[in-house]
Length: 118
Image (cartoon, rainbow, N blue to C red):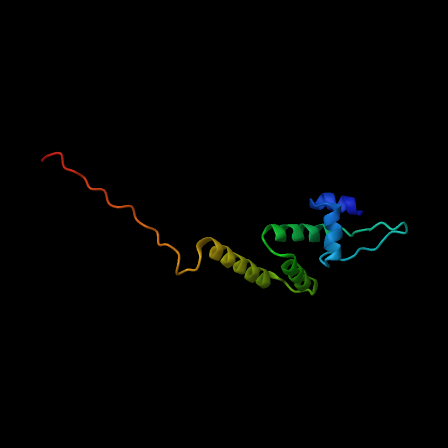
């Protein structure tokens, strides 16, 4: 499939497809006799993964590492879990500070009731 069809199907621009190819995230496809890139159908799945991984907060370097593991025939689940856990810790640190500095939830002061029978 040509780059425009691939890009539209994956929800990215043709410029993004070329960028991912240059960055080593998407293997360079063979070219037709007229010089057009001819992508295999699996490229659409790979692009969708790259897009979704970035949306989840993974850097391109992290995405590249996950793809390297997968391309080697191993399941990257454990690695992805560790990456997501580290990202979550980073978000918690930036939002809440260190665990020692976090505020404890405060309770609302108890209301005093006045008795009407005084």
